[in-house]
Amino acid sequence: MTASPAEPAPRHLWLVVALVCTGAFVGQVDATIVQLALPTLGKVYDAPLQHISWVALAYLLAFASFLPIFGRLCEMLGRKMLYLVGYGIFVAASALCGLAGSLQELLVYRFVQGIGGALLGANSISILVATVPSAQRGRALGYFAAAQAVGMSAGPALGGLILDGLGWRWVFWITVPFGLLAMVAGAWLLPSVPRRGAQRFDWGGMLLIGPALILVVSTLNHLSSWGLLSLATLGSVAGSALLLWLLVRRERSVPAPLVNPRLYGTPAFRSGALASVMAYALLYAVFFLMSFALEHGYAESPAQAGLRLALVPVALGLTAPFSQDLKRLVGARRIGLLGMALCLASVLLLMATLGLSPNHHLYDTLAFVGVGIGLGLFIAPNYNATLAAAPADLAGGAGAQLNLMRVLGTSLGVAAAATTLSARLGSGADAAHGWMSASSDSLLAAVRQSLPVLVVIIVVAAVAARATVRPAHAK
Image 1 (cartoon, rainbow, N blue to C red):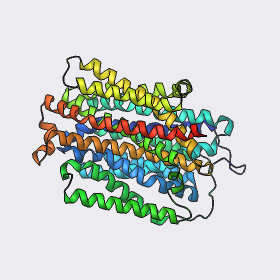
Image 2: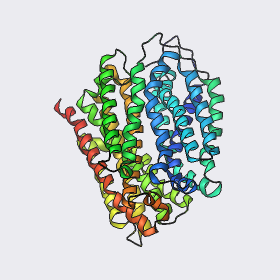
Image 3: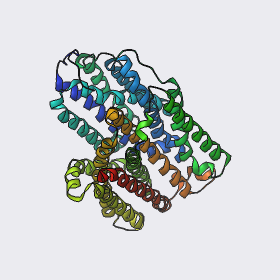
Image 4: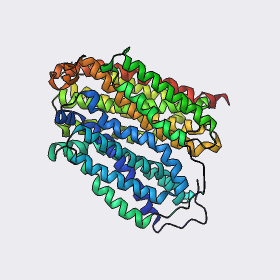
């Protein structure tokens, strides 16, 4: 999408870029800061792992479910108004999260917060593309990516300091002033991009996509407590399969689908999307498991744990800009394998030392940096290869789908880590709360025994990424 001559010029071009980058920063801070707060929130609400994991999942699933819906509505109704509405919902829900008196209230407010986040996510890149002239667009998108990286890096460290100094409620309140400032600035700065006019809306897809995603992730998140062959698990799997089948059938039959099935008809795009899901699943599974290992297993303060976990996104952010240069040196098919090999070595180091070595600080640090560098080498080349594999007329939709895959991967990573850790701590009603009563050694052993799920994620990501670039060599 490019700006048309009829569109009004923004009052201050780079202030618009700064405004959109603020939204990217706040979104990534929120995503990582809540991961660090999960052990604290579990103790506050005396909640089992599968329940407390929903503090992260409620936001992520709302974001993923509403992102394609809002992407289409924003094209139909105009972006400025809905972008500001998104900020308003996000800010109000953030304030309510900090006031929550029960876990149930917190989950409702987190879901609403995710709806606001989806409105921001559906608009951010499109506003940049529509506002910034093509000659300066690369620079603007670079700032946007940097804001995301800084937010992801700042989240754990900032969250640890807030948890130690101010309490868990400020984990949610900290984003409120940024959001209020952005709303005021956006009302003044953002140009009113004209609507595209009357378009068909995929109401059936809207009704199917959210329940399908929520049921898939719920099944994975509660697998350990339900049991692999229980009626609840089998019914949930059957329901998930039915909803996904209906969604695919619906999207193939409508002229303007929310999720264009033609994108996923391209094998290379399909593989790249899967690789993107696995990369973010790995990142947030590491955040989830190691938050509990550091805070409960090693009895580190949230500030200490946050500073150490921040090594992962910092290493990722510092490595990613150089991944394309290294890709030219080692080849498109090897860069993904190199990144995942480094992640695998780092996870194996954790498996060999977590709770077993007196030098765990050194080994943990090496592992965190290794995972960050590995993902930094993996994500950007895979993203570019996946976009290149998309049909030219669907390039815009391809970017939106990869954003959706990122959020879905985050959800699956949290769910997989939660259900695996819960299973390692035991089964039964008492074991559901076992992570709080478990000794340090027992919890560290459970985390260590949960790490093989990361190995599975790494292998799937490597195979998928290799398949993504294969057609490029065949041409």
